[in-house]
Image (cartoon, rainbow, N blue to C red; front, top):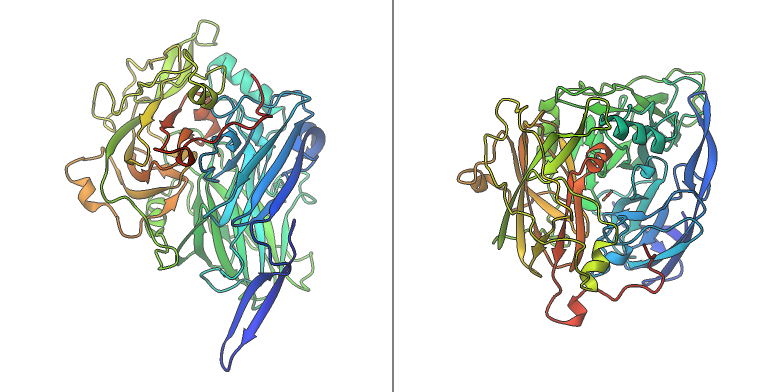
Length: 565
Ligand code: C2O
């Protein structure tokens, strides 16, 4: 545990025991402070050593442990040669976009030699989130877990685990990732694939020179464990499974779910999943493994990362068993898995899905090929929402909004595509160009209005699954389907009772997903595909949520140390 002493207590009545966690010193809304020193460190994996950008020399970076209600201050000092900004993925940052982190959206990056303190409250959230660099591809090595413990006296709404572990899934390149990306952009093509997947920074023994880079958790027979699984990979949705052990999903994106048992978990970049695992097998060694899910005709890797679940007193010489992972293109598994995700919707954790919609948005997701005279084929791959490729501003959009600076963005992002077509019909390979305006185009949203957003995949060049992440909010995933969204008949099938609530959702390959949220958090909020490749190609936009009717419902004043551009 990073901070705050916690003691476990057990209360036994005649037939039952209640186990919980209580803080030793009654911490009420404590202040937790962290120092993040961005520094370059030599790290070796897969028989190579290379300098990577790290936080405090750690890879992955430190876990942040806080308690619901805490105020958190994280001082980031940048000693690397790259500009840096850090995003606390999933933290709602009420009225406080200044601490959200996406570079040029809510802040200018922290330049070399400078520092900035992210100062925010963690309110009405508990569970597993994570943090990562939010500038170019630096999150390849700059990321870590962010764990919010429930308030004292509020035990988990599921059997209390004996112990818990974080499993942060990532990707590793043998070369400098920023260079890999630069080369890709120069060619107008995707940069080359990662060389390994990792669990807590370790690829596991199926990769060369990786025996000593294998993450192991030790369990005791009969005990139950909470695994906090985070997908920090740049470009891959992943299946995760444990040999011989079933998992019970209890939380996604820091929201409790109705528990359900499963042999495998599907997790997209940006998402988190908490599962309970009971060590109920023969004492032995069992692989925990993850491998990409990809059901579009797109080149993807099939590397398998492994870690080991090891029963106590079992010797390391035993060869672990491999779990059965769904096939790489197992669409049926993916759809049925996502279908099982339901909010807990208990009296204590009720669902607040908007039943009435003030604003209907329909955004298409597409690829394109734009002219690029300097590129290898004279063209560059690009991506768009409603055929608009987002152009990055040179100053923070939130500052521009707050100080009313002109000429930084326009507020004319269209609510629906200008020219509707058969979105998921035969592949469309002509007229793929996307619109690129001089300034980023955003969408204005009235304070406290309810928004329904349908994200529609298209067959522009190729269908593909896209994990979409909205900053500043959780949303409810009220529906999804394959093919074109049908505005007449599909809404009748929406789940408005216990839809999953999350901050990142996978739009199915050649399908659509419908989200609802109440725009009660004023500010400028980024929304993008969490595949870094697609974010870089422009698959992103931002909402400007207007201030509420009073100062205490409006964006807070910016902190004094907000970095200049
Ligand atoms: Cu986890 Cu805008 O990202």
